[in-house]
Image (cartoon, rainbow, N blue to C red):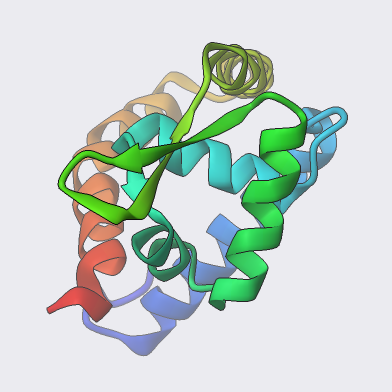
Length: 149
């Protein structure tokens, strides 16, 4: 058992979460969209319309990369650009209904894959995962906001 204050806990958790995510991606791929596009759509789905600078910041990418990514999603009809009502010089990017459907489909397929994997676990392991969810969500929130403090 790892000591909860040990760097080994952080390393073990990071490694396991990374491998879990990569395995999930292999077992429930995004289809015709790239991982970067999927991440962009999920961000807009979860956080709503935002300016390009905030989007680039949240995705940890440079503005030219963000612009190219959003351009591609706009061409596919998954994202739209609209004038920012508070600043005529700026635009807001937002997910379209088609983009929402794409995110919902991806999440549904991934939920199905996780549900199948959970069914193979013992009741004790499923309970441990359920009990850990609030702490994992809190850690996610802290990591997402770490650079914004």
